[in-house]
Image (tube, rainbow, N blue to C red; front, side, top):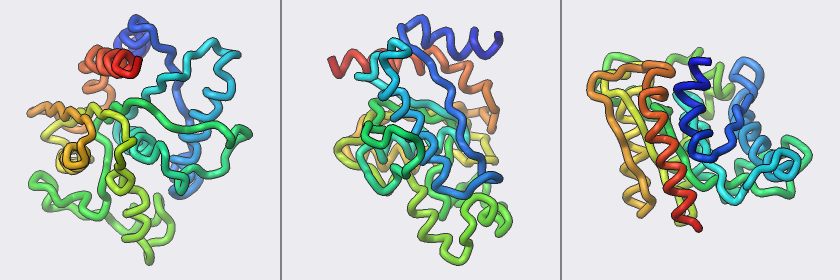
Length: 223
């Protein structure tokens, strides 16, 4: 009830249907299985839109932490075939999205802790192997997982939230993504919380109305 009231209700009140995505974790399958699963869900929603009475002319995606990374990656790779995968029965449908809300997601893992607040930390070999498997070829895999790599003129608008005291996913990660989007003339707004750490759902709930308003504005902008 708390999640429904504080996170989902503002979206429902704005006229949006909400789907919660499940995907394989890194303990089940290494990257890029996770983004393949996300894209499979988007294709499924398009294929089944009549069954669920959905208007798929506008699809927004949001996530926090690792989910923020997948939301950002889904957004920048909307029209990039290399990350589509072959999951599901509806491969003929598009997996593109029209707007992205990223709550403190990782971006460039090659410089993950290269931020003033996390200068004392490093990604461990175990962390790299658990998520990506091939640690001998890790720099190439990091590049494949980086949403910045796929930014193009078709990348949708972004709204990004991050706590400046976050030592789990340092704020520099969102700043890198935001700056890259702006450099490529993609609409992006970065909202920083000066005293925010890696605060789980709290930051999402605090800004859920801004998220709903952002999606509503982007939907109207494409009419």
